Length: 368
Image 1 (cartoon, one colour):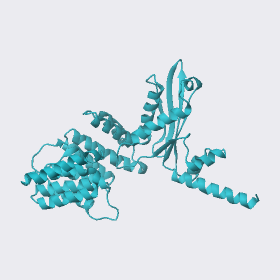
Image 2 (cartoon, one colour; image 1 turned 90 degrees about the vertical axis):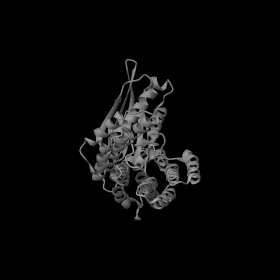
Image 3 (cartoon, rainbow, N blue to C red; image 1 turned 60 degrees about the vertical axis):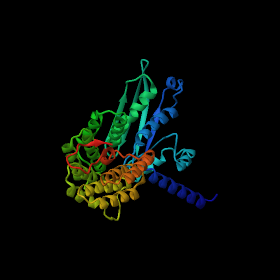
Image 4 (cartoon, rainbow, N blue to C red; image 1 turned 135 degrees about the vertical axis):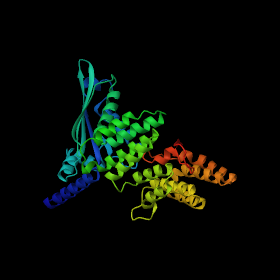
């Protein structure tokens, strides 16, 4: 092979690896050290990395309007990363990311044995939150240490994902104590504001607004949604949730004024769950003001916007038909609501998905 061919091949390889670095800029790398005595129990480095990574993936699987970062262990490289490994260039992706200013996040962990007691230390440096260390000592089982360290790491690099996960855990268990959610959220909101954390801060205020609704505190919910919009005026879900509060307060015209920027045609439309919930809220407000025809039209629009929330639209539509003296049509919509319940997608950020919005004045806030 002549020199020109070699240089061309190296140039192509460098280009491909550079593309790999850019494509995986939002990927969190995980690398662990496991001492020999622990490996002898069956927990090798690869297994430890996989347990840790899978726990983060489980946390990130919580449905959300804010996309989570991708995570993979160093023993599970990308396709082009395999080429780098073959050529003994294992760290080239991270080096290229740093050179390109992409600020990759890498988590390094070590299992430490001290007088027979296991301890897990994870270090990392987030481009948004700086360097950090997670030190887990409680629990005798190494898998428990890995899972605890995974959640502690998410609290550092993605506090919104951690708060959201705790919120969903509390709701699904039927609990009413959201103190863990508040602790994570308030800790992050107490930090100095940074451009990189703007999205998370807006979503954290929005989540605290939903928590306030869970506690039947409309005044705090209103304040939190306003704070979310102060951080991010373009946060559609914050505007939607504030409109929900206005409708619950029987301030229907104000609710519609908030909803118009969400539902009207835009170059970049809102996410489908947000648009569908906005149409449902509009439908209930119109119905409350006596325009049942507009209410029905908006329910139909909600179904076109997002099939995943169809159960909620049909539930509210059935009540409208029932009050309008059309019991057979109402029964049909209730049956459709039940049929769509298995495919219902609940986004914790959207307040309407947790509550039944009434068209009658002076009604208490009721859970679905």
